[in-house]
Length: 527
Image (cartoon, rainbow, N blue to C red; front, side, top):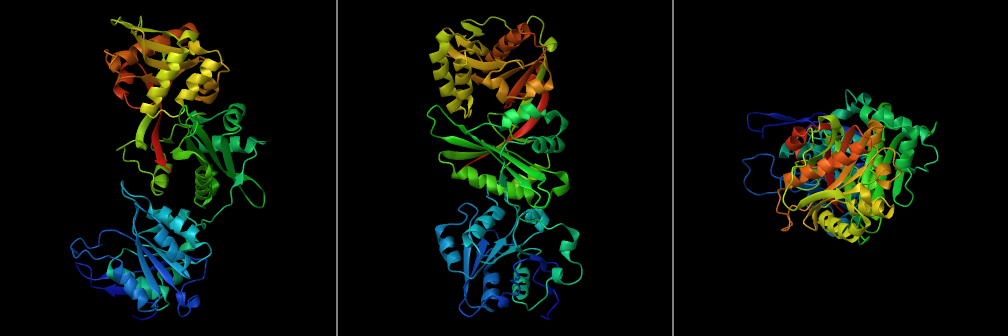
């Protein structure tokens, strides 16, 4: 192969195929590797366990073996160690990386629904490697993989991982051929280089720049006034927020909000909420969002007791998840967040609903059912409510709901708890609030009062549909429960009702007059 010429091979069915290698960037000045390697210096090659690039290659060989051999023919101290999306970087990989002079990390493609992101695994490998040079070899467009937003210092792009592609890459890495990015048009002249921006802890003293950024970045119906936003953000003890500022003017161009919330009554398990990441539009695609994301995840995972990370927040409720259909969905998918809807935390829809009380069926929906009654709670119900909500919230994974019920009771607002009883046993419950209240629930759920002063809210609906004591259908119980909530809120002067963070039941709610206000993706991962 002549230096400066891309390889052309005939190993691809249907004729010759040009294996063009593009040098996206090399801020470490480590290509060619002969600049930094001496005799005996170990280079670790980390490659994913994937199917061969050619479907008819049924010999079961690792498709990256040709890459390892091509590199070893030029430098005998190559250590080829595959990794899996399931296990990521293990103690075996750490041992090899710690003995290496440099690391070559291969990314074959974006994650499938049952895989972790190879980009995320590459970031872990980089942290383990500390100051060692790391070369990312991307076997697909760096834009499709989201690598332009990651702060990897050296990236080489291939059209795939056929043997011809990998052999051409080995030649470029050792200076025997020129990469496309080093001659002709410079790829970097077309984009502003993403980089790492050091996040700072937000002190909460000056909410004005964060408020401006919030309303600039979010859709109109999520806009907030300054004081309500400040109230939601300033939660001493369980809120950590971060900003990115321009180094010269100290202007806030990125913001990330995080919270921790107790999962259950025991108070030992916590959920870490990555509630929001926003970046000023003029400064997007420069690595600011990724810098905030990585920093926030790192800080949340350090907190003792955090066993789950959620996108969105429980209480206080900024957003229940990623707004459905927004551009950030693909950004998070590239970082390993699954959105196939095939299980809890994998992108199922959560919906906020709004109802005009005048659209509620005339006379209500309170047709009598034998043994089934609905009413406001009393202090005599306290212990029964506590036991019921603890059991149902644990069974259905309603994080933070128990605390909301107990907070209302302790605030003396137990009448804001609506109960459904079959004979003397609680089988359903919900919380109501109005925008004029100072209850913790009203302060944690901002959207009803943001919509208007005549909007009351219903939240934290629990129905014990698996309880043998409940002989009435779940749909009937839901209708009767909502009817009682609507009736009480109407008596308190409300004209509309806001229903918060409900999973499923689209046709049923629409048939009762509710309209969708917002849809989110429910996303969380175990730590």
